[in-house]
Amino acid sequence: DTAVSQTPKYLVTQMGNDKSIKCEQNLGHDTMYWYKQDSKKFLKIMFSYNNKELIINETVPNRFSPKSPDKAHLNLHINSLELGDSAVYFCASSPTRGYGYTFGSGTRLTVV
Amino acid sequence: SQQGEEDPQALSIQEGENATMNCSYKTSINNLQWYRQNSGRGLVHLILIRSNEREKHSGRLRVTLDTSKKSSSLLITASRAADTASYFCATEAPLGSQGNLIFGKGTKLSVKP
Image (cartoon, rainbow over all chains, first blue to last red; front, side, top):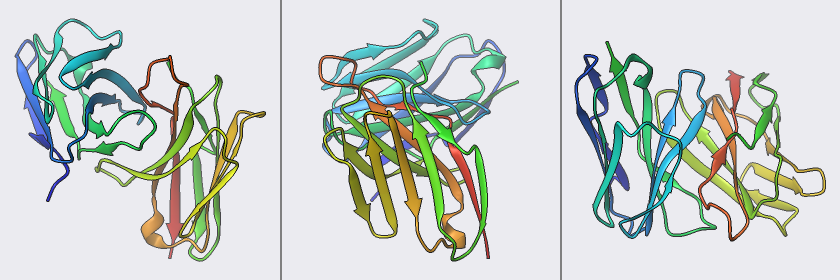
């Protein structure tokens, strides 16, 4: 049973397109996150949701819009994709503060 | 903003040797966590140490925390080829601050058989 699953695993698309990445967790965790890992392996928080409510929105272009239809899902929609959006995007979840995160296996986005 | 800074950036050892990775951070923390990332995979949580703890063990892993020096170390004893991965430290700010983990840049560990 996959605890945090992301789809798709790979995404290759042209500049200017709109794409979505889906994330689902079956752990019953209250908090979900999106992180971006760049080519140098640096991980940066993008968004955090707690019980479907946005609690963290780091300095991310407004072309990125998260949506949490319920506690178990956190999707990421990206409009007007740019070359610089190429990265690996990770979804993660945790029960609450003070606990470790469970990460998905990542979505490698390549914008050409 | 980046909080943790791992040292060294890369480490290459022989199987059976011990591997020590260090992490320094800048501001107060609620806890510090270590994660492993195998190539092309997601991060896996290894161990969490709270700000009032000084040492923690889990199998072949030993983590220390020195809040006065704002530093932590991860020791992997009797390393195996399967330990080859990148290791990241991550800090969680105290209550009242944003609760997401802030990650360092990672140490790339290579264990040669």
